[in-house]
Length: 241
Image (cartoon, rainbow, N blue to C red; front, side):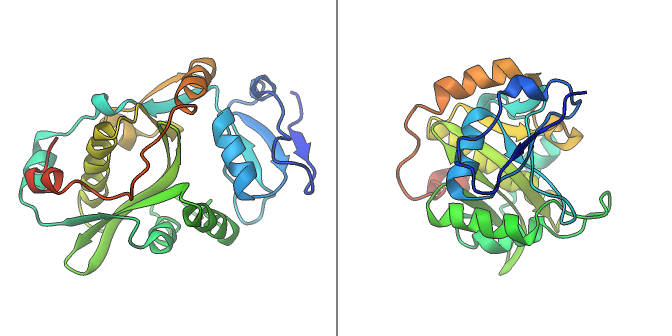
């Protein structure tokens, strides 16, 4: 098996190997090392690469051979979830507490021992948020943050990073409304990185790395939404597009 490429810490942000070098690793491990500067992270996303590692590891960069994606028009909303949405029990916002959303996403989960959202990752994405590359979606029950998600935007692509939920359906409600809003803004692709049954139930599926890269080459060069990230009032009131 080919060894992953080691990125020197002081290397430039474009210092990544060709994606084909990840083919020998089942999960798409491509490179190790480097840094989490905004420029390196954004170059990585543009090329179909993302960081994912634990506290006891160096920075690991991945590009899976099968990429999980969603087209906004493919979103699946179950009948029970749609009924919950129509009750309007939750309040939804964007970019109101980015750091808190990422921190909640980093919290312990029943099916996992640790977290890949290290303190360095938290600070890196908060910096991306400062530069308006990263965004958060919040779901509130009263004045309590009970669900949400965050990710990175480039062109007409939203790269989803993580989501959390402290109440039943909170993250699904936040995600569904966000996908509807992205569709209104003309976004064409949501990157979900790796397969999960949760995302599959919402309409995501996997495509080959080469096909995913072609989508990036087209959609990342398009102009994304330029205004402040806020939900349209009528979308929230109706609870559906």
